[in-house]
Image (tube, rainbow, N blue to C red; front, side, top):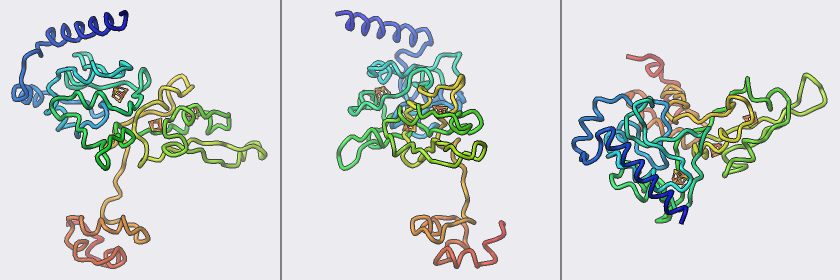
Length: 262
Ligand code: SF4
Ligand code: SF4
Ligand code: SF4
């Protein structure tokens, strides 16, 4: 009974907030216009299966259905105080991470396609572990594990333990007889759920979730791993003429024209 009351008061609060912001009853087309005038923060962490940020901001109709559907109260709708498009859902992993519900209720309830269930579907089955909300990045200066003090709180908190985060053993040169056990994130597998950031024991988290586009660099088409067949395929997708004409990474790198930009 208490849960029902909480749910209905939460729904009422949501509706009040949306009304207050003048957002109730606006259709998708109207929202497009509002969205155009808004500059979404590049650092905002979105719910699972969100479209790319610019598309997401246009597609989301600010209905709050995903927020209501989340059993952990992970998601919130941005207010004028948040540095992102008002009324769009986001979460702060340090406060409340995403618990990667296997049935993804937030995504299922999204009526606009801004949360695209196809992104977390594999062989016709939901797989929440395919989420890419962001990627965990470790600050090696403040992470005490890199100082040689034992800590594996982030590693233990990770739902993809031993996959998205691994522990790497290094010799502690300072003492000469201990190991330094470092957390290392596998960016391919990390979902950006933020359970590691939530669990980090340092005063300010030494592992934080960043949007993938912010966290990742880009080597560019001048650098291709000739020993990696998958990476070599980039030769065929690059826009540079000399690279397109090259058959292999070795040909491309030996082509003097490929060394100079236009
Ligand atoms: S997957 Fe679950 S915990 Fe994560 S945002 Fe969706 S409903 Fe909330
Ligand atoms: S965000 Fe952290 S806890 Fe979540 S999958 Fe990535 S490394 Fe694991
Ligand atoms: S929980 Fe924080 S301090 Fe501990 S190993 Fe992980 S990132 Fe480092």
